[in-house]
Image (cartoon, rainbow over all chains, first blue to last red):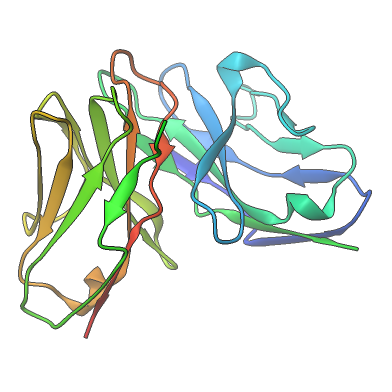
Length: 110
Length: 114
């Protein structure tokens, strides 16, 4: 069955330190993966998607099919990066259904 | 463009009652998806509507239902409320022409069942 796993509920780092938010998936076909972010008191919003191969706010994510991972990385964390991050997998077929991980709360300490 | 709006923002109901939540998508968007967010289960897909037709459905009991109107606005209904239905209900809209499009989320309706 399709599944997304985010093993860390909380990740605390200091400002300027590198960040890696882990995401592993289970999917039988060719996966389409996303990272969504929810800042305090704001709505959930798309951060990046792997098919775009883009870098948003300094974050990047590489799809590793061998390890079935899509980890989110940033070389130098900023305090404004503190938020809840969700990894999501498109379910496939003619639908917009997303399967979300349980999320990781990133806390960047000054 | 105005974002996705959801009404009401907060609701308190008692067990056994029913509730209707509303979602207005971004103008021009034809796909509306609903998700339930709880601390224990995270974000779980309820259903998706496109052009007034349910296109996909998650693993929720039949007490959860929805519909979409010709103007793409969507409603979801939960009948015979249970304590476990307390959650944040999010809707998301997209153009709906192709899969994997960016979905834009509303602020959510927080439902508390007593």
